[in-house]
Image 1 (cartoon, rainbow, N blue to C red):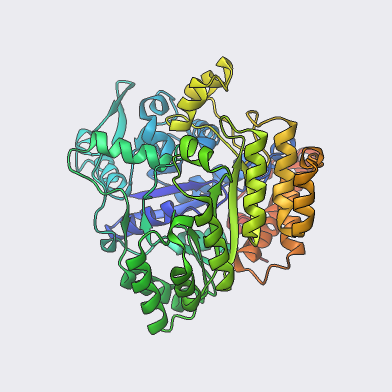
Image 2: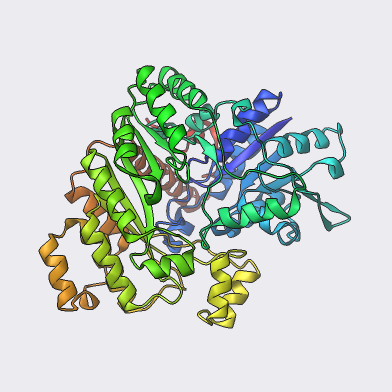
Length: 527
């Protein structure tokens, strides 16, 4: 039994965990990458994407693996991507297709109504996917597989949710080989997580609704936030150092520092074992003080990213359910800077009820905290999130927009450039100003606030360009993850262009071509 994962041009830690577990219990796995460089949350050029997309190339790679089950990771922004590829696969072969990740977890029946989707996996997928594979081999009945959605005579059936995995240390290390074989440029910087879940209940995030889903559907009391032991995490980094020669680690936990006792144990062990690999982590302002910042720095943390979302304290509390004081946010930024840790701050623009005064408050707070770098994201509404309910209550969305959201008619979101739901020109001017704020002297920021000039700030430049411009000007030190990004663009773009030229020449001279596998199976290769 071989399970093949179709990957949407990014490193998916969830797939690596699933593959590692499947291999541990005796199944084969494979991965095919769809290099959708021009149709992703950062960059959207539909015409370029259609011109360069090589459907036969991807399908031929899938067929060459002769999979028994094809799995696609589907967050809401990737739903249309997944359905598009599922239809294409079904037109070529009748291999069963399973969707997993957040969107099928919350909308299993809606997803199963699509003829091209045979199964959905809800929640944590290690045991569910393995048992589905066993069921396809005739070793168990589909109705016995917790967390599974399937069809009987074309009608969706959804089994009970599976309890969460309590002891994460029982799981194997993530299967990096699966990705490094298909996308070799990813072996620049090592990504992992020290735990699962999130201790916070932000209204815009799926962690909040996921926690509620488990609470409502799993009889046994479940702890949503769980963590590997510090010993497990250190062993994994040492293993990766020896196996892959890693030079930098990126911990993708929602909040690496939420448990101060765990952080103290981890940092002490990381130093004692002489791991000597610098790392990045996501943190939360409530959990960062002078002690924790110093511990993180001493153990090798050189950069963090911290979400504050808004500089308006009342807006954070009432709309986002983030009970963080302005003084705590500023203290966290100052503590990180004093410890020598570069701090990138995230804010969200376009929040329900957000006013110009709220945007000014965000600028003032950032000017006082002085982060190393800034990301300003546009709010994206998702089905099942609390913030969507608030937006409907306040009548902030049109009936057509609500219908599109609630009937799963989703397109990809512009993470940095806004969506069709983005705010007006005023918000776009603040968006551009905030992204460039780390480059501005304090006197200039205060001058613009006093004279009310931010509303006139140019807003026509691409946020993607502005973000990368600030990184160049700030002279960000050598960054393994930046290297992988540039290598990815070079390798995948070259592969797409080569195959597009081959298809054009074949069409011109009347010969079939363009869709082969062979040496191009490494998405263009590094040669």
